[in-house]
Image 1 (cartoon, one colour):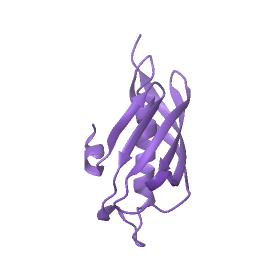
Image 2 (cartoon, one colour):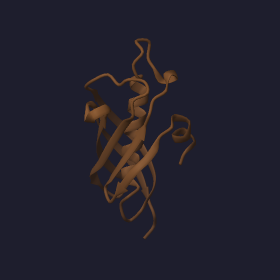
Image 3 (cartoon, helix red, strand yellow):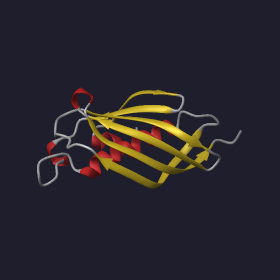
Image 4 (cartoon, one colour):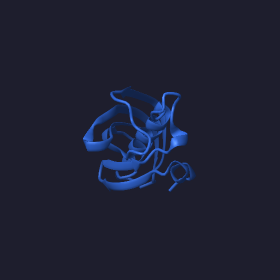
Length: 125
């Protein structure tokens, strides 16, 4: 787990080949001026889940770095509610990959959708 994951309270819930689920319960210091979860926190969660999904493929991915990230915010997330990001790989080449993600709040309410393009480094075969 990275220091950023610890600091943000992100937890890997599950992973399988080509997918990952990461959860975070935002605290009050992650709120925007309106009292809802800041979009940057949601973006970080989605980016992290997509990056984690890339680490499930073979040959193994040893480093990921997003260089394009698109988020669409659907509904506001509340401080204290568990947010679950479910990511899956759309394409994985030798040096780049594309992933998509859904971020859901309480009761499966859609909070955001995301897609990202990543530079990846794979283990030598």
